Image (cartoon, rainbow, N blue to C red; front, side, top):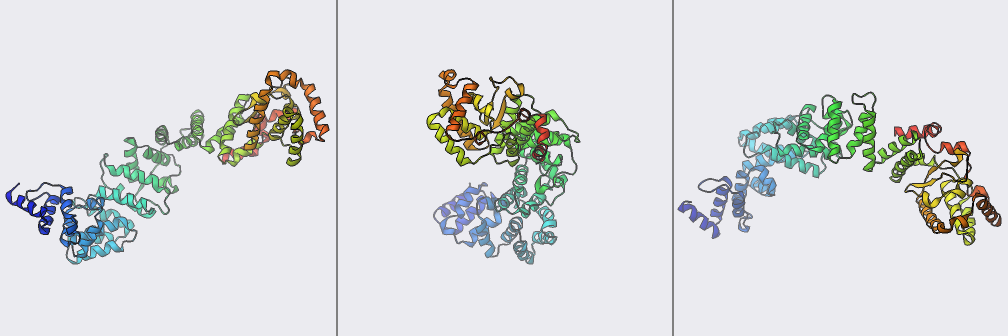
Length: 515
């Protein structure tokens, strides 16, 4: 460093305002014997003594690139410089206002001031602005290419982030449309920002893309190729013709490509974006699609159900129940339907209700009789409670092994050891329709499990249990239909699922599969 530079630094350290400003300028520009060092330059220019200095503000406005001014929070400094007539400050404020304000008036006002003093860049920008925000955005940015004061990639990243933060849907669309037209390298951070913005913009009111689908597709394809799962999900949905941004797949792609779209959706699903599994199910279950694959569709539906999608759980449960040929199939079906109903799915609950026989009689009277019986015979009282909650027939209520039949979704009754007729003896899965039903089932199982060591002697065979029940009900003036459902052998057989159930409940099933 030259002697006069050392003397200048010494004067700056001693508080000389002019020296501080000059040292700051040289550090910001990296000229006159000083290295380029933004932090050092700003340290000199941000001293409290220079807080109101027009010269310091002008140096920052004129020599610091706009994206650095924004990043370092010096937009207010830019406005101070503009207030004292700095042309570079006017232009930079005009550009920043154009990028961040939904109204073009502030930007045009700043640029007009610079144009009146003959600035050629301001004149070019004003001509672009005359086309309007929607049509002139790309032309406006094209005027700034190659200008070291304006790093377009960094500025667009900052402007897009601010617009998203403020929920400015139309502005986000304009910025993304302009950014998509830039010749960006595959490694540009702006590409990832654009993909993230497209993802978040789906929830913004008024969002609409201003660029053609070819530009956006190129951006998403580049990001997906570099392993961005959000880009893969967005592009996959668009290529498969599914709803994407602004509910229009055509806003992102020019042509459909089901095979590529399905591959991208699978990549997104594998990366942890669970909603892609349900989209894949829709694609592969469409028999008219070029990628129709029933086995793959079932796999994707199972994956979606496993991560907690209520729609997938309802569809899987309904399909399993429709094709059930064993009690294990029915149990699996009810499990998924119970999960979906627990998330508030009304169609799943309707299917579960179709599997439970109704029990007549007022609830209050039934509870009164059960409470009276409970004082003398807790074993029988708990069986009556379970029978009423789950719609058991008299035969099922007396013979079911409740302790071993408890499931997370309800009760498995049977097989009945006391009955020879197959349709009556076969096991039946009954879902719990309420939280109370499930709670009472667990309480009953606990009580009945305690009697198991002496179960044979205590409970007796079916005839002994029937006599015991008849005597208790007669003693307390209770009727059978207050606790037990009525169902023939064919009705019980239908409630076990499969084709018979599907035919009888075809309207309920059709609605559940179509929703």
